Image 1 (cartoon, rainbow, N blue to C red):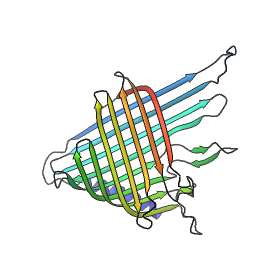
Image 2: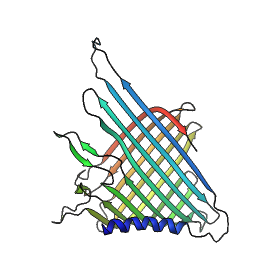
Image 3: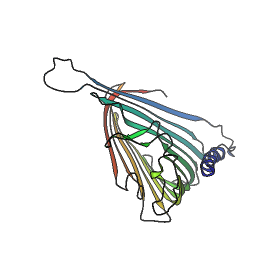
Image 4: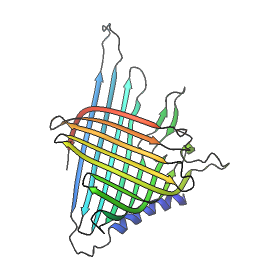
Length: 285
């Protein structure tokens, strides 16, 4: 509990640091962007349908946003990604198909043209309980903030061109659980650890490339290399190719990759998730 409180206080401290009065005396002006999407699929058959098939219902919603305060000497940017989806096929129970809470805040001091110091914090978790359906009965494997991944880092950022931003720094990473300790427990110790705290190096590279007027590629690769075992690099990658078909219709192709060496739940194997979605999109801000 004490470690969890320390993590929360770290996030609050980051926000407080970023809100210190600006010596340039420039007025803070925030710019905000917010976009949401909804994808629906429904298939049903009556009793006379002879070619086979099962009723199906699926939906997925997502919300992406960013708030930026850009001043001559500082930049404070906060991004947030939320997603949730469910699927029902035939007589099977409703199953979760997507679930994401991804928050990041970063404060940068503009020391030079390309290389600048920063402090950052990220939080990754989910909304609802997740299950392993390969067992009978199904087995719960995760829930809200179980696991929760918190990372605080400081270092130097480099932006060679407007479309690419990369950073490298020292980081503290916490994996927090309460019930599903397989994400945080060290199998080499007899004690069951509900919280795993590791110091290491963090590298984050983001790409935001407008390929055409209606075609956008966004990619993010996060690497964390723990000091105690430099060979066990944690890899997280999230890449999306979005095409705007019309004002309200879009097509999105997303590939996510996760590799958590030493984690008992995934057994250290590379996890890949692919999504192709066609649906409604709306830009609020």
